[in-house]
Structures are given as structure tokens and as C-alpha cells.
Image 1 (cartoon, rainbow, N blue to C red):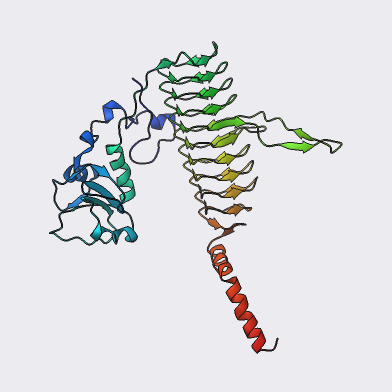
Image 2 (spheres, rainbow, N blue to C red):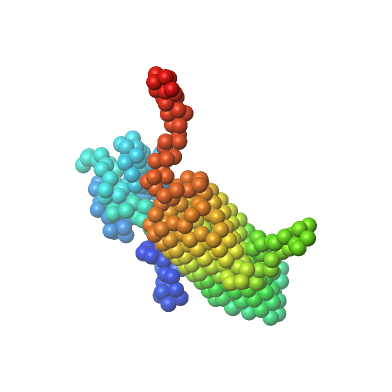
Length: 382
């Protein structure tokens, strides 16, 4: 029985087929034996699974995971920073996961348990997997309402849901799941254990790598936005886009995101990259590995991103730019220049920190500064 694909629990994402082939799926029955029994675990169990230092009673039972502001008795919460640490004394939570670097008020008579770990955020991922409900089972085969072209190749272990349309010569790999109303154009390729949520469209010749996740209404392979004025200047001539879109393994793409096909080559997204909802990626962009692109980002055509680039929500990137490895663009920024390795840029138009951040801070006080200058000028008779 096919299960919903999921990413490995710990460590870096496998980036190639060779890296991934030995990785077990967390939701696979063979690897879910350590799931929380009926949603309950003792803190001793958690300490063992997280390799955490335990302070307080070991037999405390936790039934759920909640943020510290809403945590109740029986809840496990987590603390990643000093701000949340100040809320711990008044918290009703029964147990907490806290980063080792955070000072936390706790004495030996406190009935609550404290689990100290190197990184509370990473530990929380593991805990959430333990408490996550089993996904709905998915049966291999095709729903009777699906339309599958006779020339398409569907692996026997793949699942094709209601109202899917699969075009000529399209291929769907082992364990892939097309939930419902998914459209594959001619020669489209869906790799092993890919999950396409309802309304996904993968157009002609576009390819999706293994264990990628495409959320609802993702569209891959729309024509790039390319036009030229006609010779008489009275019309716009559409430029054909002959390339495709290639999505690497372990990529996750949020709902409503659109990625345009290339004009002469392919638009590509590297392995392990995560793209949020409602992102627009223009034609011939080359997105590197393990990048993070937040919601409402618009990326112009032929932009190149190195590995590990982070783009904050609502940012805009002009076409033909290069963002070097590990560079960052703050949310709401408008980038009009290339970035160097590891640089952080902020603002609209964006500038490199720390100078750009200082300029933005000065801008907030511009009116006050102007009044001060006028007073000084008046005293000086200027």
C-alpha cells in the first residue's frame, strides 16, 4: 500500500537519487514504530528519542504539542529564545523542550519537566513527527474518472486520483501520488514518490524529481512573459518559449506558485529547495539547491540563484540578476543588483547591509532630522 511521501527526519536532505535510495520514509509502516502511542508519550521516552538532558519527573505524560502561550496541562511546549523563556514561570505546560543556550528558571521542586537539547527547533521537528497522525492510505491504480492517454506510462505502484488528465507519452514513476484533478501535458515526467495535490498542472515536457511535493494549483511550464513590438509598432509579437521546467528531488512548492518555461533552455529548481505559496518564477531562472523562497516573491526572467539563498516574503527580483551562494534578501525588498556570497540585502531598492539597514533607520527619523537642521540653520541665520 502506497504511503504519502515525506522527507527524512534528520540531517541534510538527500540531493541525488544515489543519496536518497537508502532513506526510509518517516510515514512508512516499517519506520513508524516509534510514533507516539495514541498520542501519548512520557518525557523519559522523549528524552531518549531526542538524546536530551532531562530535569524533573521522568514519568510525566504529554498528550499534545502546543505553543507556550496556549499550552495546557498535559502539553509539551518549546522555547527557542529569551522572549519565550520569560513566559515559562507562568506556563501551564507539563513539559518543555529548550535550547541549551537559553537560561530557564527551574528548581528541583517544580513538577514540570525540562528537556534540554542543542537546538529546540530541530528537536521540535522530531517531536511533531512523533505526534503526527498517520496519513490516509493511498491505493495504487487509477480512478475510473481519470483520463489517461494510451501512450502514457504509469508505474503500477503509482496512484492516479479522480479527474486527473494525463497526456501523450507522459510518465508517472513508482509510488507517485496524483491526488485529484492533476493535469500532465505531453511528455511530462513525474518522478518516484512525488506527491501532486489537487489542481496541479505540469505542462509539456516538464520534469519533477523524486519525492518532490507540489501543493494545490501549482503550475509548471506556463509560457514565459515575452513579447516584442511588431515592425509597425501597432501590436506585440509573442515570443515562443521552447524550453521546459525541471524540478529537482525533494523540492517542495507551495500552493498557487507558477514557474514559467524557458525560452531557449529550461527553467530549473535545484534539489532540496523550498518555495512558499503564490510565488512567480520567470522564464530561464536557475534556482540552486536548498534555497528558501517565501510567499509572494516575484522573480524576473533569467535570474540565477546559488545554493542556500534565502528570499524573504513579498520581495521582488529584477531580471538577469545573480544571487550568489548563501546570500539573503530581506522581506519586502526590491533587488536591482547582483549579490555577493553570504551578503544580506534589504530595502527597496535593496542595498547591502549594514549600510542599507542604517540608511533605512535614518529614513524613519528623516522628518525629525529635518526639523533639527532647520532649527540649527535658523540660529545660524542661514
